[in-house]
Image (cartoon, rainbow, N blue to C red; front, side, top):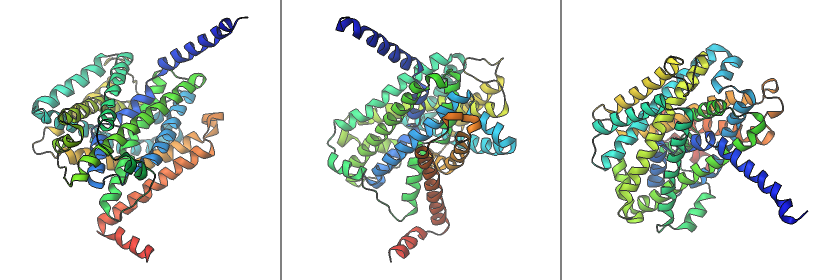
Length: 431
């Protein structure tokens, strides 16, 4: 047999594997990148603008946690063929499910509001009033989901992911002290004040938001992914997570170099856009605005969709983008009400857009540990997962994430009730 003949089956196998990966591509990359939404861009921008490079080190442990958490829920979807809400109801009963659903509904509503705040803030940079941009955006999002199929919606979302490349390209062409960036990325720092702790919670909450676990698991189930072809979905998850965090790093770096380095303050999205001009150039405002609008529109579709997914799963109602109002009325009405509530809230005069986008991410970080605890109990249940239960490394990372977030939330709460409490505790330990 010639070398060419021997290589032919290998090429065919490689081509088949690549085509299968591309066919299964979607849930991991879409879910991770939706989290670089209006709230995410705002949080990363504020982290760089207010604290420079000092919080970059958090992106490494957060990336590890993100990969572990998203892999866990994708694995549960592939192995059980059920969404996370379904599994919570079956394993923990209706009462636990009810309270979790209420907390997640309110959290997701806050996140949806923040997406329309992002659309309003981004379009205001171009001089378009929110009373024009927000209703149009809400109508476009509603039409895409209600009238589109799962395949069309997924393709639109994947195209939206490509636009995030604008942020790395902007930072890489700018004058950034990359040696300082590299050093800050591996040097943990801590400041004894409530604002810094809240920002730490916000960074984790915006990178690993509670809705992500429900949406990704539901997407894996709806796409028909099973344990047999799960390896490709795991790669989809890992690629999506690293891409999303890379975008986050470049947003922090850009704002740290241009805003923090020059002692400027950021009160609105337009402030952040204008402050980038010395670093990125005269197209900075437009770049920031386009990125913010794209991210907000992207997430304004996915977040209400995730709300509809997990509530319908929990209640045992029909769900799915490929259905219609007749077959899944609750699913589409939940989606419609979430979009309408998010858009109408932002139309209230005087709504502080930047604050809405940031606070929603801190709330994500506070709620996340409760979702992770239920996930860990489920994925370590051998009756449910069989040979696909967590290994010791995944359990260690996930439980460390839970403990870290609970600890940071306790510190933030303590400093809110007794201002300066963190500073006094650090001084007591150091002295």
